[in-house]
Length: 385
Image (cartoon, rainbow, N blue to C red):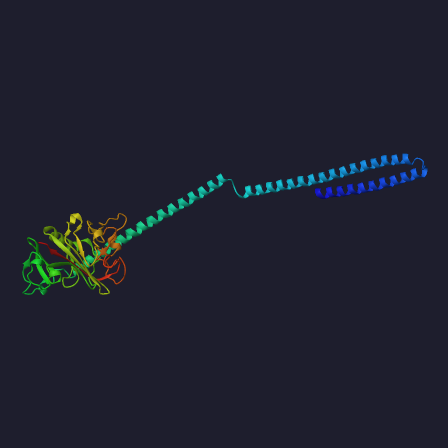
């Protein structure tokens, strides 16, 4: 609006100048005509007078021109002043808008920190609730597992599957008698024999008399999955199964044998594709029950890798007795077996009998460097002279 007003003023000034020039020229013309008419004799004087008047007119024109320049400068200054005011006002409005939308940095950091504290607090509450639920579920599972094991034990007691049962039916004239070990058995026929663990304690055992030069006592044998190996501490301590089928000889028997005389260990295995391998250890010791039937092994050789290396020095664990190296978890119930678990295993020959590639099944990690399940396993010890 101001710019438009100034432009109108400028136009009026220019019009006034033009009008003034027109008037001046008219007066000059009239004066000259009067002088010309009054006297020719006074030409020189008239000329002088005309020059004086002309000079005055020129002065007036210069003054008008200067006034016009001053007016233009004033208009330009007004435009610049107006533009500066517009820029300043726009910057003020923009800053006010930003201040309204974005708070100062300190306020923003305080707000974000409060939100972070709120999220962390909610997260910890949810984690505590989840932990309580997991503990409750674990306690429930432990209770159900104990019930299953108790029922299994009761069922086992009602069945006639003790390892001594088949002795009378398998006795032949060739294997009658009592021996200190399978290595002392003179026959080359594999089968059940009676050995003396200690004075006054004779037990029936299965002796492998042909493989690896014979004289081996078999203490674990699995080949068809008919025998349940997901058992409690008592069963693994005392032994279970049938010497004419699948069986576990018993940790207490192994302890008495391997601590009384030096023994070596042979482990045979076969997968569901028919691949066979064995692992041999030049020394094998099972400590007492007070020591958790701790495993000690010697040097390894064979076609299967050393999957007992991880388990060296570990106590035996069952679903109801946890002796593994984990404080927050129990390996035996999780891997459906009983073994010298650490955290948890590289071998699990008493695990679930099923044809799957899983560490939860009967497996030997260093057989083919994978978790393939095994269809056959046999563990044997032999006395070393």
